[in-house]
Length: 288
Image: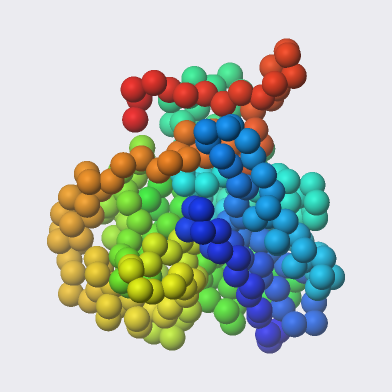
């Protein structure tokens, strides 16, 4: 069995972990949940965070096979398209992205452009579909709740990249109040992850550490079952849903939700430039 390796890249502005997954002795790798830096006040994007990944891949002479998204993020823009231009690879996400595209293309009134058929993503994974990162076996796991399209990636010999389902035990779980979100589905998705062997490593998409703790990107199934403040052993679905829904009512919208969703349902593409050569993003007033 090839020895799997993972490198993590933390973006403090959005509290996001991106990853490069590869195996010793092989060139093929996958990038998971990349970040395109974005200043909403200026409407300006930068590739500083993504450049760290490009540098890592090139320094180790790796070849990008996959650029994986766990879901259409609402808190940061994906750098998938820019990374593909720099490094190649196929951009992939779960096949329920069609549902998310349908909902948000209506909200942003861009249905003429977004066909809700999964394009322009290169590959759409079905639940339990298997694929390879070089010699590494990977299985896609549909874990809806935060959004209808959340997908986790179980990498043989390494662990599971859980996206926005679980956070570290002292932080809890992902919110469920976006269009198409469901606390009931999230609970069921989490139980699916926690049914894995206790020593399975879970890799987070985000960390929002309490005061006094530095950001960390992983823990085990056993640690989640024992210590997760929202969903440890003994918490019923009804108890979780009541807690999760009550907490969600206290949360404001993510700072980057409006630009993020418009870009991320397009697989990281910005809208086409208008006749003056300028790209524009929409701002739906009083919608959220």
